[in-house]
Amino acid sequence: MYRRMAVIAALVMVFTSDVASAQDYPTRPITVIVPFSAGGATDTLARFLGERMPAILGQPFIIENVAGAAGSLGVGRAVRSPADGYTLSIGTTTTHVLIGGLYKLQFDIVRDLEPIIMIGSEPLLIVGRKNLAADDLQGLIGWLKANPDKGSVGIAGVGALGHLAGLAFQKATGTTFQFVPYKGNGPAMQDLVAEQIDFMIEPASNFRALISAGNVKPFAVTGRKRLPTLPNVPTTDEAGLPNVSALLWYGLWMPKGTSRGITAKLNAAMTQIMFDPQGRQRFDELGIQIAPLDLQTPEALRAYQKAETDRWWPIIKAANIKPE
Image (cartoon, rainbow, N blue to C red):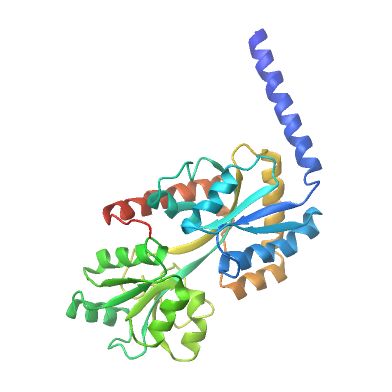
């Protein structure tokens, strides 16, 4: 009896302390660790949030770029930070899923961070050089089958999402082609336009200007829905290639053990930005589709992150992919 009462009293104290800390939070600037160099899509998103969050929470947001090893250095820095709500980790499918299959990490990518919210996602786009002898996805598959091992796909790095999507594409279509790694999407896109490689499977927003200029051919979107910015480009399902979806998604985390009250406060602030008309407009400009309501809870992000590791890690292991 006394033991049970002691346990209940302890839980009440923890809950009371948790609520109190959340009510006071934040009292000083908050650091957001971006696991990439400045100027990329994740950095741009973080800086947008850094502009909007202070008006809601009353404290400045400081962006800290910690690049290297596919983002694992930045994520590791966040994991080792104090669990007080003043260090956040923003990341993507690559940094908060794929690195766990590529590197021997000193932390658990799913369990050692507290999820705050899934922000949104962007499908990949399958595009080809403008003079490729194919005008749609089935034409591309037919061309690859007629030219085994001769086609080439540019990837933004070994083990990156585009690489894994290419492997999944090979398996689904029974085709074989060469992977040509680059240091980022920029150089790969230059070679695609110069017709040095045949096609790419990378985030859709990368190709908007090239498609508008007629420099590349869009074949299919690897999402469940067509993109509003590319309404005439079918999804892979519509193009006759089901179950080849791949999304570059964005989320926000904190170090393990951070107060649940602080998590709830940050989650509420993020949803306020995501559903503000100006916020929605900015997400559209960035090519990010805001996460559905049922994926915006911390628990949903953790479950989704775990499902993604179960999907992509076996592909990494089966292909014996080693980081560059």
